[in-house]
Length: 130
Image 1: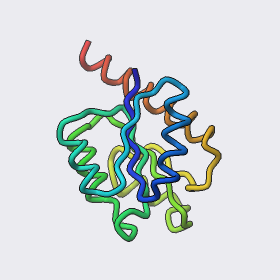
Image 2: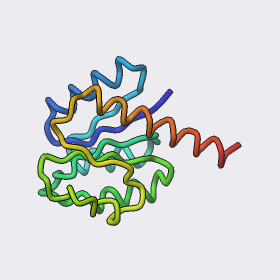
Image 3: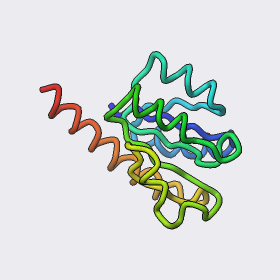
């Protein structure tokens, strides 16, 4: 089963994404803050992480680096409500970012993206573990 962590300050948005992901058979955890995310990351593993790039006033990189350290095979999908990273610079700022999409993307598109990257992370884990 694919395990997904949603780190999003807007609880309504996190719930929408969570419901769509769970309908596809994914196990989902939610964190509404960096401290909640750190607590979940301390003792659980995830295949993919949806990370609000606008969290903590637009400073998500320390958290992204912690995810890369704690879960090196997990894939981060940034979601953002602004166009600051539209030039692709976000991919150079942290090692395990694999996508960056607008927050207002259709939930089914986000589910497809998460499904693709979570499966890729699992294959990568199987390759190195097996």
